[in-house]
Image 1: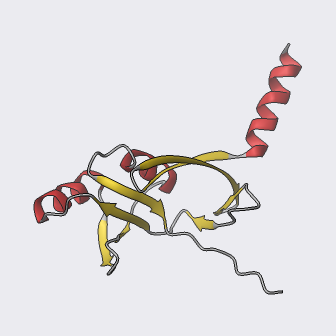
Image 2 (image 1 turned 60 degrees about the horizontal axis):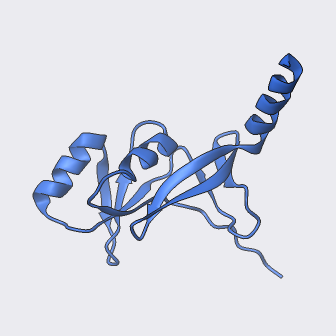
Length: 123
């Protein structure tokens, strides 16, 4: 019994963690693999990577100065830039996966995700 539990624990730890995000109001879970300081997607179709120091992209349903400032205070985020398409780019302190997971549960947040680096493949 002990060997089976150790084997299952090893398989789960090798396969990776889950990234919980919200895109377009829909919660999404993606399997990720940590390789040192870099997180990579476990999927071959949707390849991306990000680091623990990457920025967080947030899109709100309703934008007012009061809502945005209270949101920033709640999660200790520092506004870096507002994009033309409506994303707010934030710097953060702490574990990126945990912060994105917490923000994904906010009712006023339409999209939250790490700022991905998508590898370019040359043929």
